[in-house]
Length: 547
Image (tube, rainbow, N blue to C red; front, side, top):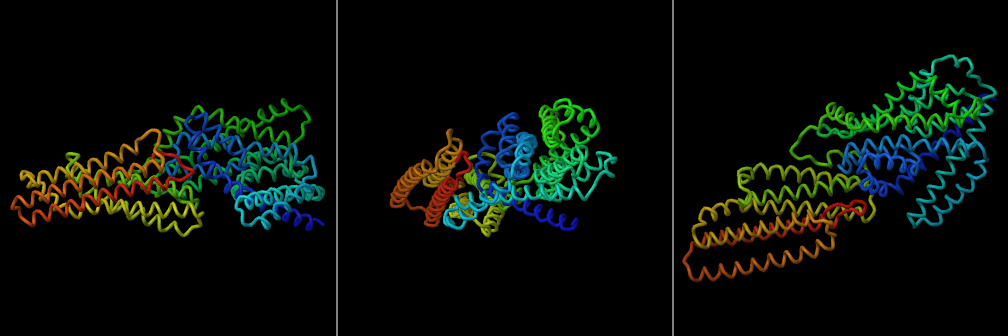
């Protein structure tokens, strides 16, 4: 009989964990873009960051989802270190909602009877409305939700039967520190502190473990979630960037300091719970309150200390300087929004480097002229990394809109490098024209080429800095106007050059050099404008920034 109960428990535990996985994955798929927009908009201050972490964890019912996505977003440069740590603190506090729901409702009603109809409705929705991604997602949500509570209901019944055959009384003498260790290992293996906490609540409700055991296990569950974050943060970081490590170790620091503190003051902390709830409280309510006060204490301790902690983290994991500082180097995910966001950001950095290279090559920025060869080498290196990244990540599944965005960004990079290459290929001709600038036609030609590059680059930089940000449609209109002006000025120049050639006896090779240079500078400007236009068109719907 004991073996039967154990296998029943394992089976219902598996159904519970399967339901939680489906539930969390569906919530993540349905809300990850919204979470990204919320993190960008509502993490401007420490208080807002903490509140965002609390609210989003209550919605997602998983601090792991919120924390992991925060790691990805700080790696892509979407949010800063202070705000990311604020979100992590809030996520710890937000995860306390689930134990209250389970304590107040999960053990007070026949949730198994409710779960089966929910699973049925969800499964039918997936089958009948398979052509509607939104309804399919809702169906998956219902199926996951139903399996979660079905597993919980029958797991509770199995544990209650098992409690009659298994006694853990001989372990009650062990220090709470042993149960902290067990809870840490269990959560690290399960990869979900919420799931671990629900399992602990179930065992406590059935009387299979004591209150002291449960409190120690919950402390360990909190610590286990931080270990998961730390492992992901360190393994997904690159040699050139340490922000993920800073956030991960910050999370580890929050939880390990609180674990040590509460184990040291365990008895007074426990007495506080009985003072608040009375001498004979419901054990699961006591555990839910402990979980809340535990994470509230973490917030009260660390929220005021974020600045000195950040200084410590930046000293421990300094940012290693590189020549490129690419956001794509910090991506270790298959989430389309993180991939596109990083590539979108780096494409603008790429265009800015091209702008400064083109200007330097035409001597528009003084001493930068001497650095033009190094500038071009950096551009080529950046182009290689961006295109390699874009091509590599096209193998993952995207929506049609996301796939189109990736292709547009790829084309923007190609146009951008073409702009720089046209200037490089004609650079020796430009130097000859500059050296002969005392001659009327050479002087006018070089001045025109400078003006073309100057107007094009400064116009793009003005659009880039516009407030509010220009919409892709407005950028497209501006590009048309800029191209019209560019071609009009170029036609006037060619007409003037033709007139001059009929009146003067200039070296034919020199004139040909001017015509070729004019053509390449024009093509460079056109490609730069088209590259910027495509980059603006590729602005993700979940990302709002200056185009």
